[in-house]
Image (cartoon, rainbow, N blue to C red; front, side):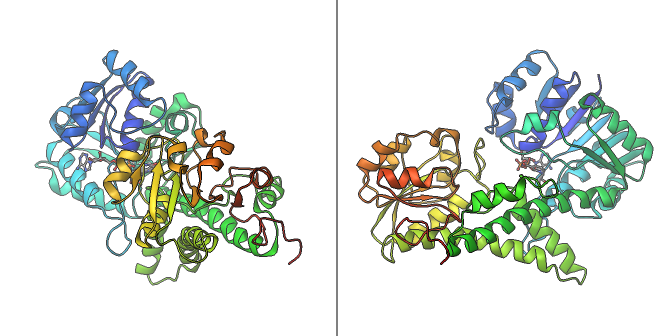
Length: 443
Ligand code: NAD
């Protein structure tokens, strides 16, 4: 049993703290957001993440989890301090480090015994050295500490399982001893471990996210070509993915990547390269393709509605950036909804858990209680987030209530032939068609 303090109780901090408590450690979570801490102390969850509420409750009841806004309380008996604060995009696309700076400063000011400080936030290469300087300068008197970079690779929607069964854990530090001590905390997970220097660890995170984003933009570019040439990108991806050198993951064509990580991390990596005089052509292309993919959906809707969405009623299924999360940061769905509203459409929406977050971000959406209410009297229905509950909707019922039978499947969730036989005018992403819903061989 170790005493652990986690700074930041968002998606990463709360999951990290909860999982360490579940492994038997004593964890105090610190956040500057009093509202979040009050919710957690009441047993309410500030975010939606499958399995999180039960695990927090179990460990809080067992006395292994505490929530506070006080750094003094959090650091009191801590041996390890995890920094898990946000690093959003700054004005030029750089990672905005104001929260990392503030957390490091306060740790430096408040620490009164030696600590191992572990940075889990995604931060530009060199931030570990910078954090060390901030902490040293903030200390009233010198006290020993070590900084370790341990980038987080969990995915929202499967965060607990990802934390507990990671493909690998990466530790970077100037102190081999500190990196090994942090590695001990992760030993119960039995996952492969990479111990390296701090800058390399920071780069592993950016390079991993940029690579995954590149695969998505690659298949999305292929999807556009498939669409024009009459091929089906879902079959293309399957045929490619069986090749062991390629693998099947991150080859699903769709509305483009979103969320709180890929868009900002690719941008920040490109910014790092530019700042140091380089031209990150591939990263720029990845972002350009991703932006186009969202536009491509609104263009499809316009094309299906004879060139304009002005005055039309459009239904949207899904607002979160992906299934099993309430996170709407950089959600492709919200970009598409905003664009349709700006073009004069009346947009009805439904998402199983992201409605509240989305309605704070986008004005003018008509909020519905379920998928059937969304579809009623619409000229087109868009599937934008692949929630399970959209997979087996009564599509016949949906069709009969729509004004026009236009179905745009942004996630290739439905069977095109089945939908067309039912009477929909179906458009997926990268599934070749000739405009009448018939596969166009060879043109
Ligand atoms: P988040 O916005 O959900 O949570 C950040 C939390 O930090 C907030 O609750 C905020 O109030 C708190 N905070 C800010 N400044 C603070 C301070 N000085 N002291 C204490 N608390 C403070 O962010 P997140 O999604 O958990 O991401 C955190 C980091 O992890 C980011 O760098 C992100 O890129 C990275 N990351 C995120 C994910 C993900 O799926 N969300 C996955 C891997 C890595």
